[in-house]
Length: 236
Length: 359
Image (cartoon, rainbow over all chains, first blue to last red; front, side):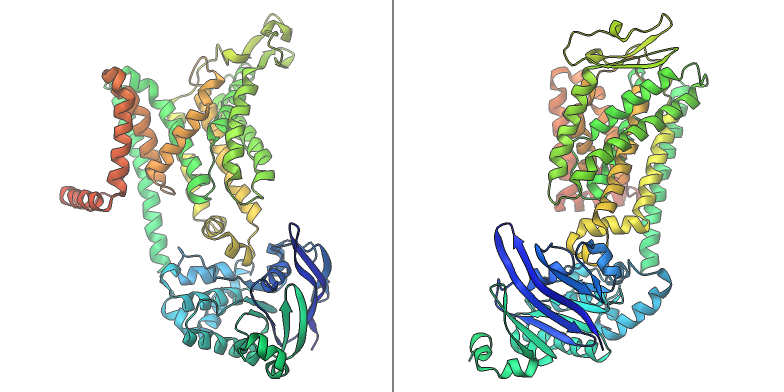
């Protein structure tokens, strides 16, 4: 077990707006770590900065002992860090299988078939629909496709940005079951969620963000039990 | 399914190549038999040039999904650099076809350099910046060529920029055996016209080959992925700037080659020929033919180049009829009711003849 991702004193700005204010956290090998918080707390900004889509003004991000500071996003993926962006973002005009193949873009071609099999095993629904154009999938299926696509790149850390957003409760349940089973198979996951209850119940550890700062942290169970968190995020 | 779609797109590609070859053979036979009118014979090379312009612009607009409003600028760069190359190599390469090929390569090369210069800063941005910058580029090139003086003599090339407006070709100090190639606003003059219809046909085939192969390659899949969803493409590890540059510069180079052929088809040519209207005209070919549809671009470019000439007898009403034809074609290819009606008629007429539908 080692630290896979370490974020220290991260500061991110949108123009003059200070969106992430000195956030620090770390993710250990094999963990599910969740960042929870309300709209505008800086959760997605943090993830996008780690993935290289945004640039931090100060602070450091190290991934597997190497700094990620100025690495361009397309190189970050081949280092083993995959982001499933918010709002699903699949290639709507490609088929399910083509979407998955795009996920393997940074991989050598030889393992493609095996990787497809692995993802289809994880998501049997996708196998059923592999010839279907992604735009015709339901929201939940698109979310599964986006996750499957990220898994095609053999990530050492999978970052999920609000996987439950806009999904019916039963689908949310399904998505979290998938997250659990990915965790069981050894994938390290950094999960950003507004659905604090669901996120904390699958997470090993969690960090609570409020207006760009970490205001609380602890194991999933601790945070679920904490009266402050209950009051602020869990409805009572 | 993957095999099936591959087959489907390959079949469409083959149909496109076939249509071009067929059109070439038919036109060649008609021309040599003396059955083509003089105005149409004179238009064969320009048609080929516009067809390649349309196909290459379709790479930027249809496949990459970026709007370019300065495609004529690349054509201009290719045309004048091609003319300079061809005129100064006249004694070094006496064989006209080879000289033409070299001139077209030079045209493609300089246009590609222009493409890199524009693309490097602009393609890093998201949004419609490319449209604005290419629009400006087209105008800048026009003005630059307008004050460019180029001559050639036994000492080599002589260049001067006539920024103040009081220089003439005499200021280049050419030797007695020298020739003036570009005379500022008068453009190129006294060009030995070495462009041929066969060269035009080859240009169209090469353009098609490059664009269709790029589209079905690994890079092509990446280019279409970033067009569909840039964020997703970035999150699977695509280098957006690299693939955008690849498509944009290829498109510019092909336009440069087409420009060189165009420039060598006329004994004189002014930079104002390649203005904003020409860029828009090429964009009209692409939109009318269908974004990403190469055969559509070819048919639209050929038809809309011939149409204004064919409508000459309508005199003043020419552009009015032209506009009505454009609107009708758009309706016919986009209105669902009309499209169903058209498909029924086409099916009744000939079983299946896809591809002719753009007309």
